Image 1: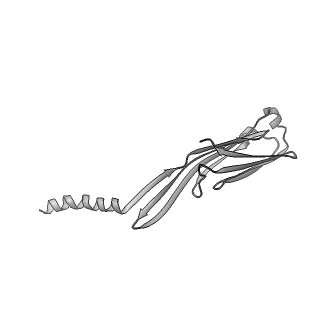
Image 2 (image 1 turned 90 degrees about the horizontal axis):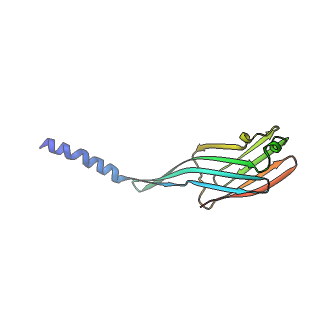
Image 3 (image 1 turned 180 degrees about the horizontal axis):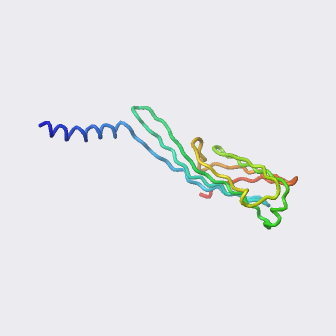
Length: 145
């Protein structure tokens, strides 16, 4: 009799634990693109958010990985002639900036990272500003859908 009770007790406890804690994961994997006359940009995000319900209490955990690539639309030799530049990007849940002194190389126009916090949603708009040698350009990155 005790063997039967032990055999039933473990599955009963596991079932109780599984039903008392419910987890739902949503993914937010998006690519935002845009361009101006001289520059173009791509912001890629792979993110997830877990909603955890435990005893009538809901908590949230999020994580994301992202990259931002800025590209010069002209000749690469012209890019290297830029003496000083600054670029920024800003969305609802992300942002960054970088100052660069000459020579400007294509590899310097990339940023990325990972972490927790606010996630860009499908309808987010990311504003990009590029300033170089007294010139300036602004454009927006939007989700490809």
